[in-house]
Length: 137
Image (cartoon, rainbow, N blue to C red):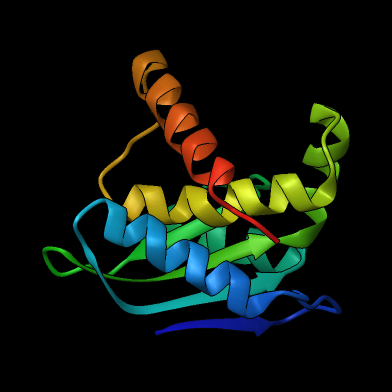
């Protein structure tokens, strides 16, 4: 089950389409959907989590807490809408494109993809692009 929660003045318009896309991405990697919670928030909310849980005193667009059990994908994904908007502007893409990239980025981490090394970053970007190419809203 995928749920979308809002801790800021923001709401996804196409929740069902996004849910189907996320489920399809997970199943494409031979995994099953458990309980996945998206929490959309602002910079201050996510910064507090970043300091408290990761000891990082920086702004970020996403923090994901992976509770997966084997191939059953579970977790909480926190996304700062303010960071997504700023990043979309910086990368010269639409807000929606950047939001969708961040939404699937958290799932890809749960599926085992990393982004610490340059090779891992390239593979993560490829996986993001593949997933984004399958999204139809």
